[in-house]
Image 1 (cartoon, rainbow, N blue to C red):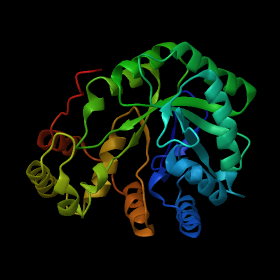
Image 2 (cartoon, rainbow, N blue to C red):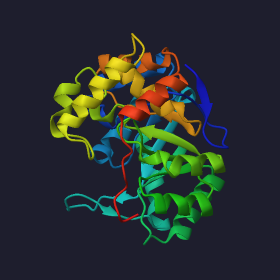
Image 3 (cartoon, rainbow, N blue to C red):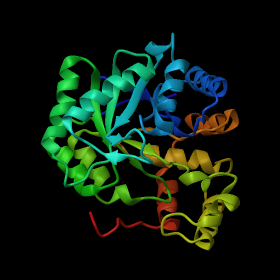
Length: 302
């Protein structure tokens, strides 16, 4: 598997990582999936303290026990659960971040996190305080680098301008091309990497596209999705699978360091990882893909 460096850091990752949110709660299955991923060249594992109320971090921690040196471990912070209450509340405060990191370290069974990411962000946050929290954790050795997981251009711009983030995680695929207009050029200009989630668009870019297109996707209707997939299948080189094409498309931009498709089964994991063996998309294929897919728009509140 090709390897890329995340931003200007020393973190080197395989170009296809594993988004751990969909792994489930069955320990034996999760451990087996993570081990297979590592054996096939995956190095970046992405989780969050929010996923399954911390259970996901615990299971990832069990899976990497004895294999920590093979992993670039990423997790997230900012969504605070309050005991006795449903759901969570947004808390990017310095006190919370510096407390939450210790809980994540305990659940993950490690004494450092490679990439610690703010799991959201708003323009109403005390951004300087949030940045200070991450910088101190880095100086103290609890984290190696930090980034942000966000789809809000205005928030991303602030962190690019004011912080030492090495990465931005956001949704990016053939069917969600919003980052292309502003975010990807911005990241490329500043030497910050994109970690692309959702490259197969919730399964619409897979062989199960008819089933997955039933509810639409972003501003695509079911009919538009089926027509787009039909055109993709007709116009790409023979042998190009949809999921592999989606992953290779997300990787084609120079700012992208890694994609993190999720997997809930061994077969899904293997299908995703076959994209590592596929040829890169040619300029002609990229041009065709962009012609048959549409440029999505961010919501008005940026």
